[in-house]
Amino acid sequence: MARKQAVRREPLDPQRIYQAALDFMDVHGVDELSMRKLAALLDVDAMAIYHHVPGKQALLQGVYQVVLEELPLEEHAEVRWQDALRTLGMRFYRLAQRHPRIFPYLLSSQYGTPRELEIYQFIQQALRRTGLSDQDRLYATRALYTFAIGLASAAPTGLRLRPLYGEDSPSQPCQSSEDEVAFSIDLLIAGIERWLEER
Image 1 (cartoon, rainbow, N blue to C red):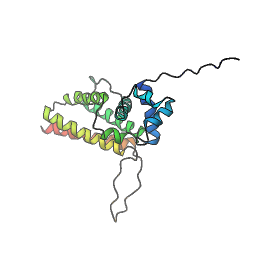
Image 2: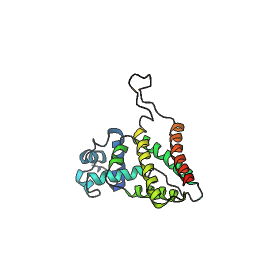
Image 3: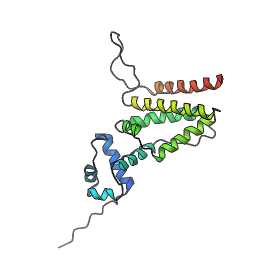
Image 4: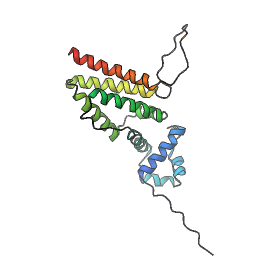
Protein backbone atom coordinates (compact mmCIF):
# COMPACT_ATOMS: atom_id res chain seq x y z
CA MET A 1 0.00 0.00 0.00
CA ALA A 2 1.37 3.38 -0.99
CA ARG A 3 2.06 5.78 1.81
CA LYS A 4 0.11 8.99 1.92
CA GLN A 5 2.31 11.94 1.18
CA ALA A 6 2.60 14.23 4.19
CA VAL A 7 1.14 17.71 3.73
CA ARG A 8 3.81 20.31 4.28
CA ARG A 9 2.51 23.08 6.52
CA GLU A 10 3.70 26.64 6.19
CA PRO A 11 5.93 27.47 9.17
CA LEU A 12 4.29 29.56 11.86
CA ASP A 13 5.90 32.92 12.61
CA PRO A 14 4.76 36.26 14.06
CA GLN A 15 4.30 37.91 10.67
CA ARG A 16 2.01 35.13 9.45
CA ILE A 17 0.03 35.31 12.69
CA TYR A 18 -0.39 39.08 12.49
CA GLN A 19 -1.48 38.94 8.86
CA ALA A 20 -4.08 36.24 9.56
CA ALA A 21 -5.41 38.27 12.48
CA LEU A 22 -5.54 41.41 10.33
CA ASP A 23 -7.45 39.62 7.56
CA PHE A 24 -9.96 38.32 10.12
CA MET A 25 -10.46 41.67 11.86
CA ASP A 26 -10.89 43.55 8.58
CA VAL A 27 -13.98 41.41 7.98
CA HIS A 28 -15.34 40.63 11.47
CA GLY A 29 -13.92 43.35 13.71
CA VAL A 30 -11.47 43.37 16.60
CA ASP A 31 -13.86 42.16 19.30
CA GLU A 32 -14.67 38.97 17.40
CA LEU A 33 -11.07 37.79 17.32
CA SER A 34 -9.91 35.17 19.80
CA MET A 35 -6.80 33.03 19.97
CA ARG A 36 -8.98 29.98 19.40
CA LYS A 37 -10.48 31.39 16.20
CA LEU A 38 -7.07 32.53 15.01
CA ALA A 39 -5.61 29.09 15.65
CA ALA A 40 -8.41 27.54 13.58
CA LEU A 41 -7.67 29.91 10.70
CA LEU A 42 -3.99 28.99 10.84
CA ASP A 43 -4.77 25.28 11.29
CA VAL A 44 -2.64 25.04 14.43
CA ASP A 45 -3.17 24.38 18.11
CA ALA A 46 -3.91 27.58 20.05
CA MET A 47 -0.86 27.03 22.24
CA ALA A 48 1.37 27.14 19.16
CA ILE A 49 0.48 30.83 18.74
CA TYR A 50 1.71 31.62 22.25
CA HIS A 51 5.18 30.42 21.28
CA HIS A 52 5.37 33.47 18.99
CA VAL A 53 2.93 35.99 20.51
CA PRO A 54 2.61 36.14 24.31
CA GLY A 55 -1.01 37.30 24.46
CA LYS A 56 -3.96 39.16 22.95
CA GLN A 57 -2.52 42.64 23.55
CA ALA A 58 0.78 41.70 21.93
CA LEU A 59 -1.19 40.28 19.02
CA LEU A 60 -3.10 43.53 18.57
CA GLN A 61 0.07 45.60 18.73
CA GLY A 62 1.60 43.40 16.07
CA VAL A 63 -1.46 43.91 13.86
CA TYR A 64 -1.34 47.68 14.39
CA GLN A 65 2.31 47.62 13.36
CA VAL A 66 1.47 45.72 10.16
CA VAL A 67 -1.32 48.19 9.36
CA LEU A 68 0.84 51.27 9.90
CA GLU A 69 3.65 49.80 7.82
CA GLU A 70 1.27 50.23 4.87
CA LEU A 71 1.77 53.99 5.30
CA PRO A 72 4.80 54.97 3.18
CA LEU A 73 7.27 57.38 4.77
CA GLU A 74 9.53 58.80 2.10
CA GLU A 75 12.61 60.90 2.57
CA HIS A 76 11.57 64.52 2.15
CA ALA A 77 14.86 66.43 2.28
CA GLU A 78 14.08 68.02 -1.09
CA VAL A 79 10.33 68.31 -0.48
CA ARG A 80 8.62 71.32 1.10
CA TRP A 81 7.32 70.65 4.59
CA GLN A 82 3.82 71.53 3.38
CA ASP A 83 3.94 68.84 0.70
CA ALA A 84 5.39 66.27 3.11
CA LEU A 85 2.55 66.80 5.60
CA ARG A 86 -0.08 66.98 2.86
CA THR A 87 1.01 63.68 1.34
CA LEU A 88 1.19 62.02 4.76
CA GLY A 89 -2.31 63.23 5.63
CA MET A 90 -3.87 61.88 2.42
CA ARG A 91 -2.12 58.54 2.79
CA PHE A 92 -3.25 58.28 6.40
CA TYR A 93 -6.86 58.93 5.38
CA ARG A 94 -6.72 56.26 2.67
CA LEU A 95 -5.19 53.80 5.13
CA ALA A 96 -8.04 54.41 7.57
CA GLN A 97 -10.49 53.78 4.73
CA ARG A 98 -8.86 50.41 4.04
CA HIS A 99 -9.11 49.28 7.67
CA PRO A 100 -12.23 50.94 9.15
CA ARG A 101 -12.86 48.16 11.68
CA ILE A 102 -9.35 48.37 13.10
CA PHE A 103 -8.52 52.07 13.21
CA PRO A 104 -10.75 53.02 16.17
CA TYR A 105 -8.92 50.45 18.30
CA LEU A 106 -5.52 51.41 16.93
CA LEU A 107 -6.09 55.08 17.74
CA SER A 108 -7.41 54.41 21.25
CA SER A 109 -4.72 51.91 22.24
CA GLN A 110 -2.60 53.01 25.20
CA TYR A 111 0.39 51.23 23.71
CA GLY A 112 2.46 52.54 20.82
CA THR A 113 4.26 50.68 18.06
CA PRO A 114 7.69 51.16 16.47
CA ARG A 115 5.98 52.40 13.30
CA GLU A 116 4.15 55.08 15.24
CA LEU A 117 7.50 56.38 16.46
CA GLU A 118 8.74 56.52 12.87
CA ILE A 119 5.63 58.48 11.84
CA TYR A 120 6.17 60.88 14.74
CA GLN A 121 9.80 61.39 13.74
CA PHE A 122 8.72 62.02 10.14
CA ILE A 123 6.34 64.76 11.31
CA GLN A 124 9.00 66.28 13.53
CA GLN A 125 11.46 66.35 10.65
CA ALA A 126 8.94 68.28 8.56
CA LEU A 127 8.01 70.70 11.34
CA ARG A 128 11.62 71.52 12.17
CA ARG A 129 11.94 72.98 8.70
CA THR A 130 9.17 75.47 9.47
CA GLY A 131 11.32 77.30 12.01
CA LEU A 132 8.80 76.79 14.82
CA SER A 133 10.19 76.90 18.34
CA ASP A 134 10.31 73.68 20.34
CA GLN A 135 7.19 74.66 22.29
CA ASP A 136 5.24 75.73 19.19
CA ARG A 137 6.31 72.56 17.39
CA LEU A 138 4.86 70.55 20.28
CA TYR A 139 1.55 72.40 19.97
CA ALA A 140 1.56 71.95 16.18
CA THR A 141 2.20 68.23 16.59
CA ARG A 142 -0.74 67.89 18.95
CA ALA A 143 -2.95 69.78 16.52
CA LEU A 144 -1.87 67.51 13.67
CA TYR A 145 -2.54 64.39 15.75
CA THR A 146 -5.99 65.65 16.75
CA PHE A 147 -6.76 66.42 13.11
CA ALA A 148 -5.49 62.99 11.98
CA ILE A 149 -7.69 61.22 14.56
CA GLY A 150 -10.68 63.13 13.21
CA LEU A 151 -9.80 62.19 9.63
CA ALA A 152 -9.43 58.52 10.55
CA SER A 153 -12.75 58.55 12.42
CA ALA A 154 -14.51 60.08 9.42
CA ALA A 155 -12.87 57.81 6.84
CA PRO A 156 -15.51 55.02 6.82
CA THR A 157 -18.46 57.34 6.13
CA GLY A 158 -16.84 60.51 4.84
CA LEU A 159 -16.63 64.05 6.14
CA ARG A 160 -20.08 65.40 6.90
CA LEU A 161 -21.99 67.79 9.13
CA ARG A 162 -24.50 66.63 11.70
CA PRO A 163 -28.01 67.69 10.64
CA LEU A 164 -29.61 70.44 12.72
CA TYR A 165 -33.18 70.20 13.97
CA GLY A 166 -35.62 72.01 11.73
CA GLU A 167 -33.10 72.46 8.93
CA ASP A 168 -33.23 70.88 5.54
CA SER A 169 -29.62 69.66 5.62
CA PRO A 170 -28.67 66.16 4.43
CA SER A 171 -28.62 63.61 7.23
CA GLN A 172 -27.32 60.57 5.40
CA PRO A 173 -23.56 59.94 5.49
CA CYS A 174 -21.86 60.23 2.15
CA GLN A 175 -18.34 59.30 1.17
CA SER A 176 -16.17 62.39 0.90
CA SER A 177 -14.22 63.00 -2.25
CA GLU A 178 -10.46 63.12 -1.90
CA ASP A 179 -10.64 66.74 -3.06
CA GLU A 180 -12.66 67.57 0.06
CA VAL A 181 -10.20 65.77 2.32
CA ALA A 182 -7.27 67.50 0.61
CA PHE A 183 -9.01 70.86 1.12
CA SER A 184 -9.34 70.22 4.86
CA ILE A 185 -5.66 69.27 5.08
CA ASP A 186 -4.71 72.43 3.18
CA LEU A 187 -6.69 74.52 5.67
CA LEU A 188 -4.66 73.14 8.55
CA ILE A 189 -1.38 73.71 6.72
CA ALA A 190 -2.49 77.25 5.85
CA GLY A 191 -3.07 77.85 9.55
CA ILE A 192 0.54 76.89 10.34
CA GLU A 193 1.78 79.13 7.50
CA ARG A 194 -0.26 82.07 8.84
CA TRP A 195 1.08 81.47 12.33
CA LEU A 196 4.63 81.56 10.98
CA GLU A 197 3.96 84.84 9.15
CA GLU A 198 2.59 86.50 12.27
CA ARG A 199 5.48 85.35 14.44
